[in-house]
Image (cartoon, rainbow, N blue to C red; front, side, top):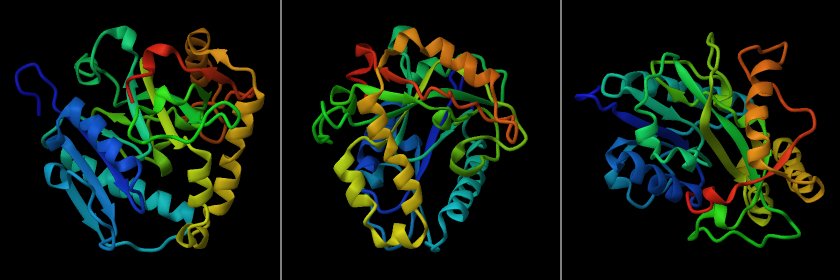
Length: 282
């Protein structure tokens, strides 16, 4: 828990069949919070351990094949349970998928760790979701050794990724961390969640061919997600700074009737140009 005036912060994620995002996840959050404060759940004893695994906290679980929706619920419940125990030692727990990265606006002049030291009265904080994709006509294949945002300039502002992933007390996340059960959400004015699941078109094409994903019902999901590449290619991009404040207000105000504790989607499916100040962060 808090030592003096400093909040202790942990980050947790879960991974299976990934050797691309996990290394960046460890490096990114390790620099910010310290490697000893990272918790990585490995889904399956058949999975190789990532580089630097001995420097972070590894929680390995037996893999049980499940259909996509059931698997999403299982992962959310498992991480919620682990996070609950982490609050014995931490003041804040950040939980999300391995291809998602929480960023504080560089204009604040603070690291993410320093920014989260501020007083927070709510049980969680949400970051504005930016679904980053490859522009199929203007951008080439991703180089994992270089910052992603030096190579990708466009994102769909998507409420699906405006997730309440910063928890200040034990919570129960719903599938995909898209909402917190029984709780409202608070969109922070300076936090962004960059989702990189579609950062490279060819990589996505290869992933969808994996037999395990096909058997568990992921094909339809990926077919829908592939629409992001067309959206980025065809939609005129808005300068991000001209739209961020409006996006937060609208996502907070217009919520789906069936889930009032989730932010509402923006009907025009806005694509933004990512501001230059983010280029070297991830």
